[in-house]
Length: 536
Image 1 (spheres, one colour):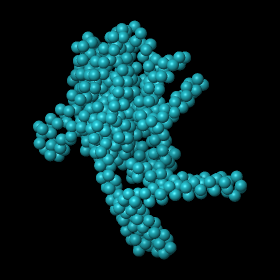
Image 2 (tube, helix red, strand yellow):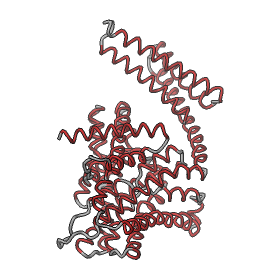
Image 3 (cartoon, helix red, strand yellow):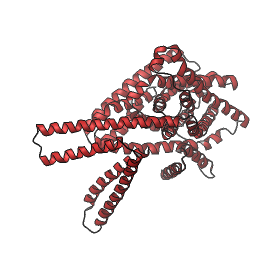
Image 4 (cartoon, helix red, strand yellow):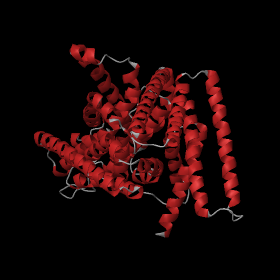
C-alpha cells in the first residue's frame, strides 16, 4: 500500500515537472508525457507497470467525456451533428473494416481478429489534438467537429470491439442482430443519460451548497456511465447525453458560487487525469517489450508500418469524399452549408491521434476464447495498438502545429476570434443596458434611498464605460489598459502585504484576514482574466 502511494506521488511529481517543461518549451504536454513515460519504463531497476484496463474504462473515461460534453455548446453540437456523426460513427466503422481487410490480405490474419484490432485503433483521442488545436487557434467549426467526434467515437468503437471479441470467442456473428443491438444501446443510453442529467440538476438545485453540488457533479459521469456499461453497452453515449443536458440547462439552475468553484475543481481534476493517462501510456513500453520477445523484429516492424499507414490513410479516404460528394449531389445541402476549403478536411483528417482508450481496450482482450484456447494474436494486437498510438501521437502530434501554420488556418482562427470578441462586447453592452433599465424601473416602483440608487447607477455607468472602451480599443488604449492593470496588480500586492503584516502584530484576526484575502484574490483574478483576454 505504502509503495503504491509512493509511486503515485512520484508520478504526480513527474506530471507537474513535464507540464512545466511543456509550458516553457511550447511542445504539447501529451507528447512529452508519453516520451517521459517510455524513458521511465525502460530505465534500469524500474518495476514493470501494467495498466489495468478497467481503471481507464471505468474511472478515467467517464469524467473526461463528461467535462468535454459540459464544455461543448449544445447549439454548436446540434448544428454540426451531420459531420460529427459521419466521423464518430461512419469513420470509426470504415477504419475498423479497413484494418480488418488489410491485416487479412497483407498479414494473413483472420477477418474477425483483424476486426478486433480495427475496433481498438479506430477511435481518435480527443485530448491531445484538441490541446494543440486550441493553442493554434483553429477555426471554431473545426474545433467543434473534433470535440463532437471525441465525445461519441469511443462509444461506436467500444460497441464494435465487444461484438468483435464475442465473434472471435464464439466463432460466429450476426450482422442483423448486431445492428439491432447497436441501435437499442444508443437509444437506451440517450434516455438514461438525459434522465441522469435531469435528476442531478434538480438535486443540485435543492441542495444549494457548492461543496455538495460539486460532489454531485463528480458522481454524475459515473452514474451515467456505469449502469449501461454493466448491462452490455458502452456508457459513453449516456455520459455525453448527461453532460450536454447539464450544459444546456445548467446555467439557469446552478448557482454562481458553484460555477466559480466548480471551474477550478474540474480544471485541476482533468489536469491530473490527463497527465497521468499520457504518462501511463508511455509506461506500457516495458510490458510491451516483455510480450514481443518471441516475435521477429522484421515481422513486428512490417506489421506496425502497415497498420499505422492504414489507420492514417483510412481517415483521409473517408473524410474528403464525404465532405464534398453530398454537397455536389444535394444542391439544398450545398446552399445551406457551402463546401469548406480543402484545408479544413485535411486538418480534420490529420488529427486522428490515438490514445489511452485504445491501449485499455487492447489490454482488456480476454486471455482465452469460449472453447478454452488462447485468444489468437493477443500479444500482437497489443503491440500494434501501442505502435499506432506512438506513431499518431508523437509523429502527427508533433507535426500538427507546423501543418496548421502552413495551411494558413491560424489566421482564419484569429479572424474568427476578432469577430467573436466583437459579438461578445455587443452582448455585454446589451446586458448592462438591460440591467440599467431594470434598475431604473425598480427605483421608480419602490422607495429606494437616493444614496443607494446613486451608488448602483454609478456602478452600472462604470461597467458600461469599460465595455465601451473595449469596443473602441486602439493600440494607445490597449497600452493604457495594460498599464492600468499592471498598477492595479501592484496595489493589490501592497494591500496584501499590509494585511499579512498586521496578523503577527495582533491587529487583525486570522478569520478577518482570510475574508480580506478572498476579496483581494477575486480582484486579482479579475485583472488577470482581463489580461488573458487582451493577449488572446
